[in-house]
Amino acid sequence: MQPINSKIVTVILVLILLMVLLYCYINQPYRFSIISAPLSELNEITKTNRSPSSEQKAITPNNRSDPTHIVTHEFHLVAPDHLQYQQPSIVFGRTDVVMVTPWLAPVVWEGTFNPNLLDSIYKLKNIRIAATVFAVGKYTIFLKNFLETAEQHFFVGFQVHVYVFTDRPLDVPQVKMSAGRQLTVRSVPNSQRWQEISARRMELIQKLIEDNLHSYADYIFCLDVDSQFHGRWGTESLGGLVGVIHPGYYRDDRSRFPYERRPESRAYVAPGEGDFYYCGGAFGGTLEEVHLLTKTCHTNFIDDAKEGIEAAWQEESHLNRYMWINKPSKVLSPEYLWQDFKPRNPEVHLVRFSGVIKNYAAIRPNV
Ligand code: 5GW
Ligand code: MN
Image (cartoon, rainbow, N blue to C red; front, side):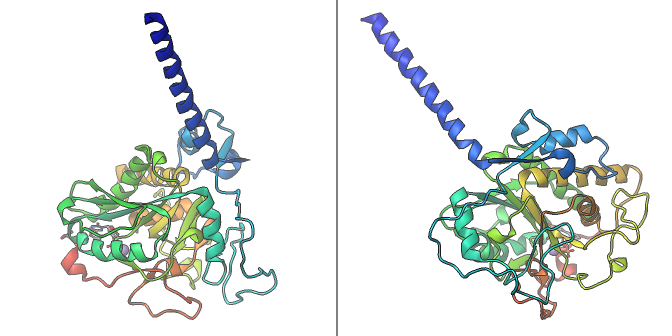
């Protein structure tokens, strides 16, 4: 009897192992379905990226060994059969705003997309969204409103994982979250100088992604906490690298953009260059793209600091330099980061997310 028993046990163990392998195999490819453009086309390294080989490694999802292809699940869009929605037109549409960049990335404005169609497409993909928000020092007071309004407007009906980075974990409010949504608190050291918090923000997002975020999310958005949602922010915002147009400068000539103007800085943007002024208070995309962005911006910030230079708007300046060279594949209109004190302009039909009015003296550390 003895050898038969052990044979049965071995057979069962082998079967379990095969089932686990099958499960892993089935789950893997649907998230990364299409093999597309060569890396060399997609990833022109900025003049400040000094180690292209490590950057290439960083962008290869799941460290797959073939460095010549970027694999992504972004491009293959499957709609459910028989979905009813308004016929699209290529001759009628909004005429008061520009809906595409010169490199053919969509610019997302209200009235340019069908939310139900997009949600149906992305529901089938079972996507998971991560959001990061920093609340260091007195900025924890913004968390309640931020989290409550996110429940009402941010990727409603999808799997959302919010990561709160704070030095005051006990001050993180209990906010009721719907099924499929969760919050994780990550402790960070307090810092006296905002410039340090700012520099660390990119570094901590980079680390979060490296900490196996792939097991928990497909896309990530990095948002300022001193803000609230007023309207839908959902699947229309998904893309490889996603930039948000700053509400303060979008009607201005590029000469007025507050880019870093000293050539010594790695955030330098020369006169006559630059597409838009993007905001540091909201950006996102796939984990691979945001990993490369945060890693590059943080490295450049540190290397600047070693030479005694700090860009005009810290990480925002580095982000703007990065997005000048590495063009975003989707651009979100200023609907996606307005400011509560700013009257709505006519082309802004809907404010989705905006910075709240804050009492600087009351919340900022003495710097
Ligand atoms: C920001 C400026 C000066 C001193 C301190 C801060 C600060 C920012 C802080 O003490 N704690 C903190 O958590 N932050 C994080 O950085 C928040 O997520 C905040 O939303 C983000 C950017 O700073 P803001 O919102 O004050 O910058 P603006 O340009 O939106 O006004
Ligand atoms: Mn802010």
